[in-house]
Length: 129
Image 1 (cartoon, rainbow, N blue to C red):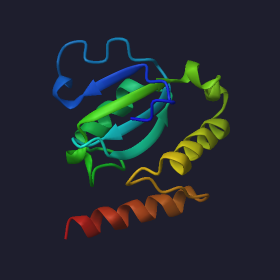
Image 2 (cartoon, rainbow, N blue to C red):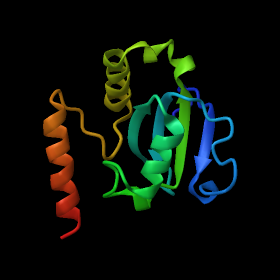
Image 3 (cartoon, one colour):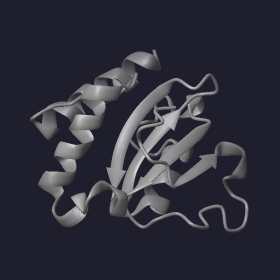
């Protein structure tokens, strides 16, 4: 699964909810969501990984339309991305870079965040009709 991109921790869905499920999880980083067949579904970044990953597994984020497909999350620490977490603009560029290179199934890169939110709401409604 993209061996050139260092993975610091792998989280399986079956481990969620167990005590210490996030043990060893870095505070910030880039995460990649995969399905049971190893298909890359989504790439994101967070300065608060434990909370964000929990939200994705529960389907309470922009991934709610496909959270049932997520079985594994691979995380790369922000420390291993040459301090990309110094400011959000730089982080956003790193996330866009990975989206462009790895082409996850559900990511959409927009210059206008409002357009992204509208698109995600549309896709969610469409998938639930």
